Image (cartoon, rainbow, N blue to C red):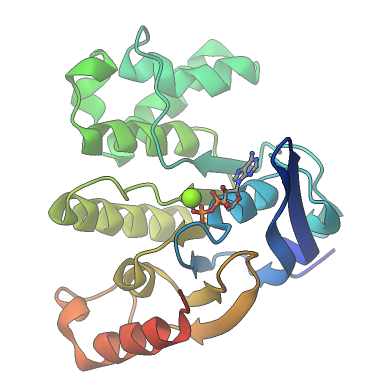
Length: 252
Ligand SMILES: Nc1ncnc2c1ncn2[C@@H]1O[C@H](COP(=O)(O)OP(=O)(O)O)[C@@H](O)[C@H]1O
Ligand SMILES: [Mg+2]
């Protein structure tokens, strides 16, 4: 057994297409400990989404290996749930039916699936919206459904790709606070990629900085701020210093 829940060992990814070869991720090594919140930041187009899909087992590496609890990961795994940049909800299914979908695909008994969907929707504060259709939701609510759909899978590992990136700053702040609360009470392990430095400092125990494409890990920061995060921590000197140091480490 490995002490790490997730590991990338010399992972590279090259895309081959009619336009030629494009190296998106180059020789990345990283480890994630159980219970950790890891944020990965990097400039736009550097390979963040590619890296997250590699870590999720959704994309095969060109070289190297991703390991889940020490075991090579070659396809999506029930212990891993992913929240994408866009919510990807089915418009003809209600909120509850959207959350139920992966549970039904996994063949969970109906009553267990119903119980999990209700619990996940209440965690994201959407219990009252279970029977509405996505078209009547705000962007923030749609992303909360996507988070509920991931949580209902009872993953050990939650992977998030700029999940609140398209939302206004206040909504994003609120959802990040909610996410931290869920991560802490559920004792999840979380890996989030983002290009927002302050978001990374607020959420993470550790921040990895990626280089411009092809992505490699160019710096690592320990975020030694109190948990649970006190109100207003974003405005403290320690927070500002960390954000500044990380900003300095990002090349564009
Ligand atoms: N399926 C694909 N085929 C070819 N190139 C791709 C594919 N997906 C992403 N890319 C390219 O790989 C690079 C990294 O993309 P991505 O991982 O989405 O970066 P980020 O999420 O950091 O913006 C970009 O140049 C992008 O155009
Ligand atoms: Mg991306």
